[in-house]
Length: 391
Image (cartoon, rainbow, N blue to C red):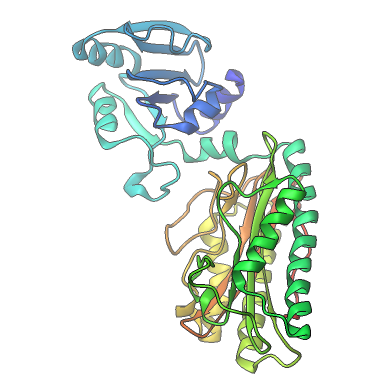
């Protein structure tokens, strides 16, 4: 943890301080940002105020007086609820403080502090704002080591994706059955062999109408044999099983045969063009040194699908933050499920993954990962699918 860096960011954001607090190990973000041991149980409320300038303040229960001893700053204690209210007023009265709070739950990833806690802080005389942009700086900005781990994971994941499509082709051409579930298991075995970890989530392998459920998961009970003439979607994500590694997440589509249906080709080309429009929008904004917000990128992408007449079939946001978790805590490319007002900033990684889902029949999603370098250049961190894979 770098207190000076936090204070600098707090001041630049226009806040008087960033108030961290926790009870019962609810806020994993706070523990990571402050460098606290998340495995150590917290049975009493603690508060840590990092002001834009001056000494931080630790407020802890007399029952757990050493809970924040690893952090710098003045130490204060409370015993009763009355003591707590008085100490919070001393700490916070008249200040504008950022907390892990999101007005109207607009960014659920950040909306961790409960309504009662916000009421308690406001009763102490403070004004409360969202820490969403601060969290992005300290949670979602990727260092050089993380970036390298992302790139290397991507190289392996693209190879495994190619192997999975090839495996399908080999079985179909030789007349041997292979199911969606068996292809998924193949991908997971390859992850293990390459030292990759998908953190308990499993790849999506779906044919025809199955992936019209965007989060379809093949199981031994629902899986089907993949046959000639099937449309195929494979979505796979993983990172190296090492601390600090960054996920890589892609989706590619194919057809078992040489003559895919015209409708499938059309929806693929629409999704591909929408994906490109999103990346072009981000590149243009950064090239002009203009602000670029998550909701705007979603609009740029979604407008292409809407113009095609399939707008109602694009049923999720355009993309999500990528970090040590596959769905990270930075800006999402979203003006559908939420209106993400956070800015894209150098050092973040995110997906762009428009999709068209024709219920019960077929689906296309085309997913790439994008990284913004320190100089503002916008990098797609691996190959981009330009046409359907003919398996």
